[in-house]
Image 1 (cartoon, one colour):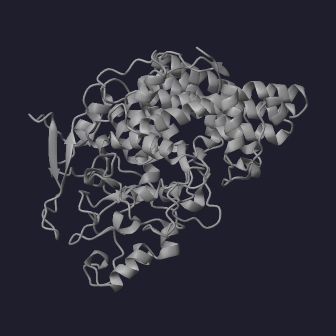
Image 2 (image 1 turned 120 degrees about the horizontal axis):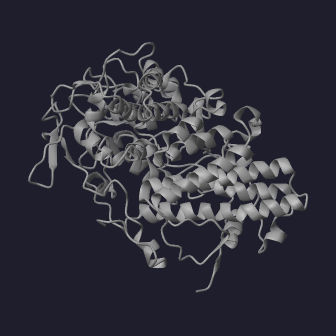
Image 3 (image 1 turned 90 degrees about the horizontal axis):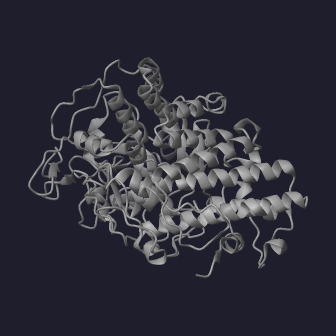
Length: 576
């Protein structure tokens, strides 16, 4: 079979994507050429090549419909209400559209990284880039390739390891362990080449750093069950000296706190000029609909994601993370940025116009303009007649520049997407200490996260709040269950939770989800209906959610059928 030159994919990927992004380092100039020698004549040309690897993540389908959906929908804490409803039932087919979007963009990024290594070295030899810049760019390429394989293996299990600039395209799947070993290898190389966070110029803010590489290396070591090696990475001074928890949890996801001292790595976005609906979903990646999809339909016009009330009830009383993670009927938005710009929910144009027209949807129980996410009398179930819970994701309701609704309103936002932050490192470190027998050390790390969550000193006893079905929640005493509970309450609605649950061991995720919602076996394929506790409401319906246990093997996704069609050496995951 004719060989495919991945170099050409990478080169043309650089040339044909005009990137205009939040940080100056991502800005590029469009040029056209057919060879590497003709293209990479200046230092900025080489920088642009590496920037094009970052660009593969400025893609809402990859981040939202792939990584975020996997990290959250499989946990039953969040559900989909659009065409992607199959996530709710663990019934994702191999031809599901989000899968090739993830797979194809991921391997484009891998291809660009593979091409970059040789081009950077040639540029170094010719004096086009300084040795210092060559090292940094090479480190970034290793980091981004390793991070991409991290998410591929975490989502699909074993995947093809493409490590060269030229491939036949017929590479079979490597084992999951071998992929994570490659992640470790790439991150270790990146650690020696990348700059420290403290040395990175302000103009380069957002680039990969040594600390980010140590964070992903440690996480990959955990997948390999080498907890001692993971602890060595997590305890590296690049992490422990340069990153810390922000004092207030609400600030973690705030629009004016992007690239903060808790964030190890986040994808950069930017609004360039006035944005309007163009039907193209902003494929260039500078802005995205990632956050707007999680808002109530009454505000955004979408409402494609909604929350499980069970998550709302599960927070321990006094936990400040609850109000800025999930809100429901009668809850006010707590984002300082939203409050400052809009005064809360009541400031959005769609709310004001709806209230002026006399709509009960936008009228509070006191008869004034609503400033809550629906009310107990009129929960916000959406406006299209399809089922929603009335609970929504406050973590993704932080960009004050988004005006909501659709039509001519701003729905594409510039909120960066945090993939890894220091709170997760602390919880990862706690899990590693449990596995290595250091229970007091694990409890100390958990306490750091929980103290911040409670705004001072966390309760000595950890337990979930009330269950949605009314059954009491018992105190959590098992150290491993403590870590899993903290993963959930700290990281849900971000990009990590399901990955961390699956990484903990076979069957751990399925059992954890089963226990969270007090599911019982039923004749109907272990499907349970949980009815919301406030029962029949203004629309005359009793609302609930259908939950089912995770079938064996459904903690990973199927290999895209389109990928198997192109490469017959790929074998499908069992059960798909």
